[in-house]
Length: 462
View 1 (cartoon, rainbow, N blue to C red):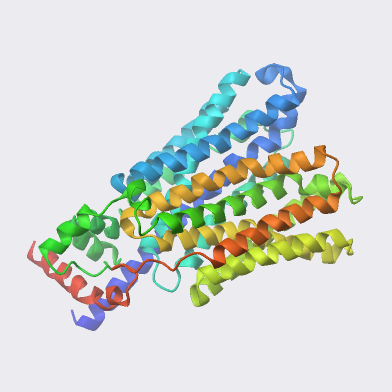
View 2 (view 1 turned 30 degrees about the vertical axis):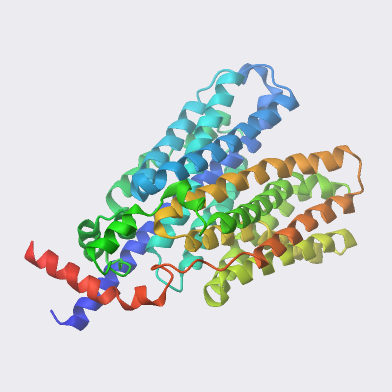
């Protein structure tokens, strides 16, 4: 086989591998989004029918809704501690099974206490997947498309949220809340088997762990190029001794950027959950009845999906930092515009732009974080931002509720959220440049061909 045809075959294998990895990760996050939103579609029936879980008041229902988010935070932080040691594939497989089983068991709960505990435990699996997906995409996606593929994967979350709302409408009167939760357990039936056969370990993770021979063999098999091979055995040993996981995040190289990235994620998720929770109520104070609630939420999330994908293309071209600060600023501007009483078409346009600047921005942040860190600390870095950011997701609904309960003017609520978006934009602008590592230097790409050739010779000699 000629060098040219061998290179074409390797590239074809690489494209096929990337397609499978992106598809599996995106489907996992679709069901993550489904899991996080399905509770909101059934809470009214749980409140109205004490025979389901027992007597339940609004305060208890609100607490039950937060348990899953707390679980997500815990799951993200836990996987940050172990993900860079266990590997991407193991974490993905374990947690696809984890949250599927959690959803199935939750559908069988017969008490408020059991339901709350199971929602928390299910959230752990959700958080672990959210934190790992970015690391997986960063290590498989080709240069120049990393932010775009990351946006495809994380757009699974709002897509799953929309799926939960649509299925609740379609199956109204056909399935009860238990049936809707059981739908969330389906990944263990179809997604887990596919992932077992089609999701490889990351060759770059193997390389970062010092398992160079395994990494080279897997690189040939999957068509995923390695980073530049260590120049010597001493260099390889030094690479393995570098701090991994959260210890690496606390190093001089990453401590300050990690704080900035955490604040950015906190701001993005505060806006995302705050607006998804309170946008209908705030708009009702402008005279829009409940029939508009679904329209506003669908517009917000559709704007996040479509706008996030478009913005991710720009992030690959101009840099994620510049685009994230821009979308944060767009969120601030659009939220201010919502206070001007424009006609409905203009209002919906502003809400769609707000979606780009909130959840769409959070998707871009995950991409920025995934590509900011070296392989040895990547899972921990994404996990930190997903976990710390989840505090914003918890605080967002509380902030909106406090503002409404305090009787502030409806415009003030939008101004407060706009201020958060503006703060996120400013923090993003001051994010330090990515530390120069072997992965971030241009030498890595230039030296992939010799590494691949070496791997091909190893395979031929085995």
